[in-house]
Amino acid sequence: MNPSNPPLSAVSRVGIGYDVHRLERGRRFVLGGIEIEADRGPVGHSDGDALAHALCDALLGAAGLGDIGTHFPDNDPRWKGVSSLLFLERTAAMLAERGLRIAWIDAVVIVERPKLGPRFPAMRAALAGSLGITPELINLKAKTNEGLGELGRGEAIAAQVVAALTA
Ligand code: MG
Image (cartoon, rainbow, N blue to C red; front, side, top):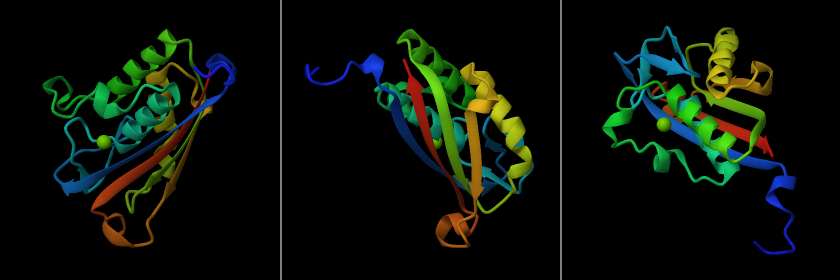
């Protein structure tokens, strides 16, 4: 480390995460660790939980630990069909090993339907439970894509997450 840099333990660390999944008929719609009634669901090696994946990347980024594909590759049969909450549990354990605590999480989900707001309390509880934090540290927001592009046609779901860690 450059001696003029502040010690890592003294700085708040922020990470960003992004994910997108195609939506297809006949798939379960899993988001934020819960299943929601919908006419389409995400295609993915795991359960296709775009919010959990973006959150995982934000946490790994803040910790300087690379990305979700490095730790949980989508060609590894161990992760086929698993709940993405498992990735969050393992990521939380990696943070704890390094003495890093989650200070704040803010997220945006971009999807045309279903309407997510009523399910946010359940999603926050599921995500917080897998991370070992209180739901009050997680803020969730939903946007449509105003009918534009693949997201706007309901053919995909995307999520963006920012996470802050303290040592
Ligand atoms: Mg993904």
